[in-house]
Image 1 (spheres, rainbow, N blue to C red):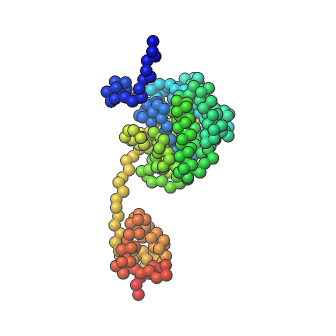
Image 2 (tube, rainbow, N blue to C red):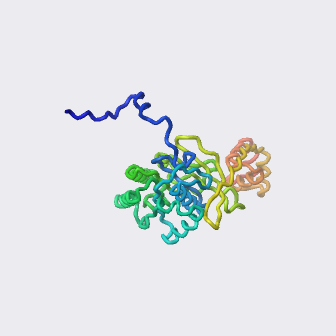
Length: 327
């Protein structure tokens, strides 16, 4: 008998609809935070609690139990590759967190104790992580933090694109989802999420979801705000988490307060002259702009526009880099 022809890779829409499930499989962290074989980037400012939250999520995934307001539909095999703490100290941290779970996560949570020094950006390092993933039969791999897995320039788009290809190779060869802890840029806007990460233009090509941790208030040291961005779905509403310093566990603390829409302030030209007079009738541009911002509580852009308009109207003049009132 002749062997049956290999199944065609080109399918009609009718065939695809017949083969595909009626609904996509549930995410491994709901709502949609970690798709199956997806890549989740977790970021935030230094010391905001990124690694603690990711360790909480790793334990919850391994135990198959909800935590910190996140729904975990089923237990998963989780491999943690962390580079910041010595293994005994990291194990001590996990021991504190597991008290509320008991032994539920013990068999499914695995730690790569030789992760340090292996670079994902080098073939030998990539092979190390793949071997560890296969040894663990990992369904989820945690990399904490990303900068310890490479020697590339995170400000160079081409270098970051190459690193992201290594992440894709790790994901595809291991058939595991990735949780990647990464740093954000020094200065980010209130509404930035995925674009706040270093090398964001490259990360956008590989990330499926982004979780950003921020401090909602300097007076609430134990509280963090979570903001979400998903590639294939609308973002979840920002939420607050509170950290228990005794257990190192996060718990849900309600929805984040709605941000008031920024109102546009109009600066009158007379306010520019008043600001200049307050500086002694003569000042450099940066001094004048700062004075206008402080006296009117306006944005930098609004102050710039007001100074330009005052110059065009002849209310102030510029001579040799200095602004002064007309004689």
